[in-house]
Image 1 (cartoon, protein in one colour):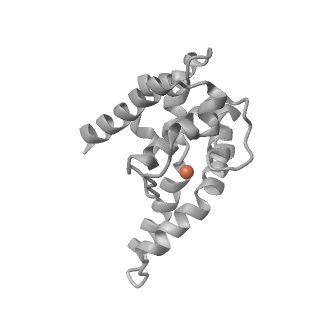
Image 2: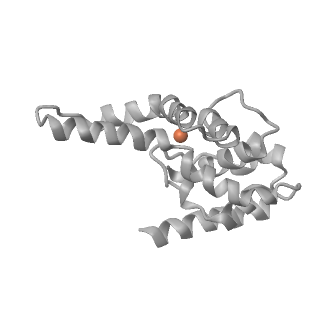
Length: 162
Ligand SMILES: [Fe+2]
């Protein structure tokens, strides 16, 4: 869900300078949808605990469930709703180790996802991430200046939303 904090301009930047900037609108939408499996799971858990107050779920259990099942559940929802593959594939592959390196939209989402982790705007923060070293950054040809601007936008957007 972290990626959805970026607006159209942020995705335009993430899409890089090699002819992918037209993906800004798609990036914004894909950013909104890519972790929809988490929302689905949270909704199910909320219904369960509302219907049965005996069910007590730990924070750790919920976090592990979201981490391990959100892609599968989100992709299932994409298929059920007949969402176009350009978005469904992002939902399916945004954490995958072997991904389609020619899918610029997927690459942009993966970059923003990692950058939200770097700045601590994620359930799995990791300050050690070096955006310039990400394979997706190299493949898309995102320059250092753009990465700095993108990080600033992510941080500013997060501040404005809190
Ligand atoms: Fe995710």
